[in-house]
Amino acid sequence: MKSSKLVIAFVAVIGVTAAVPLPGTAQSKSPVAYFLEHMQGGIDALDRLPSNAKDVVIARVRLVEKVSWLGGRDQSGQPARNLPNDTFFTRVKVTELRRGDAMVGQVFDVRFGLRGEKRDFVYPYTPDQFGREYTVMMHLDADGQRRLTAFPIDQLQYSQWQAEQSAYTRLRGKPGFRE
Image 1 (spheres, rainbow, N blue to C red):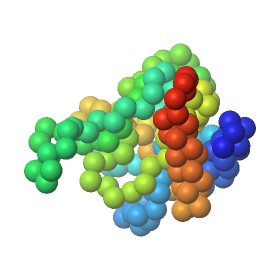
Image 2: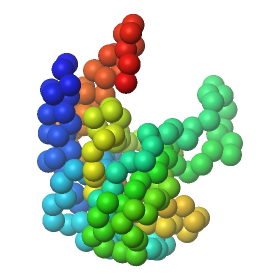
Image 3: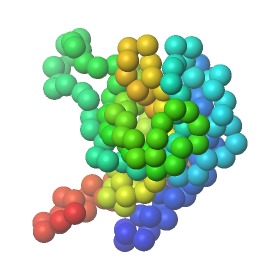
Image 4: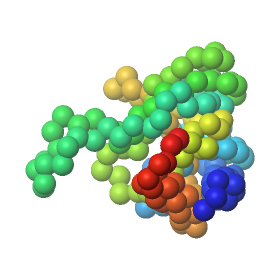
């Protein structure tokens, strides 16, 4: 898949995201996005945040570093020990503040994807996706970690993102590939 087709596929996935935070238990199996290209109505639905959420910030951001997986090594069926509650980590830089107490240019360490949730994730993965700006909702949790809010997407949107991710992963595996 050519780069322009990858861009179109990802824009289709994230651009039509329904930007409404997930309720506590409903839609618990639907795929989610943490980084939205376009924000529609409902982003100010702060009542959907965890009850212990503090310092809520809604902002346009750019990733400062690639998304990192916070897992440990596979211990083949052994209970996870000392693993963080989150699956992913990255740093984001605020480019435009929409709500909350932050400054343009401020960098935040953010976590997302709670461990144990059996849910598919959409997040910036390819170099093209990494270079874009996104709207996020983040909050400080009771444990002192800043977390991103998940927004539901439909299965078709997830499948399109997964196809783009897979195409990029295959391309990376070819001899002579350079980012």
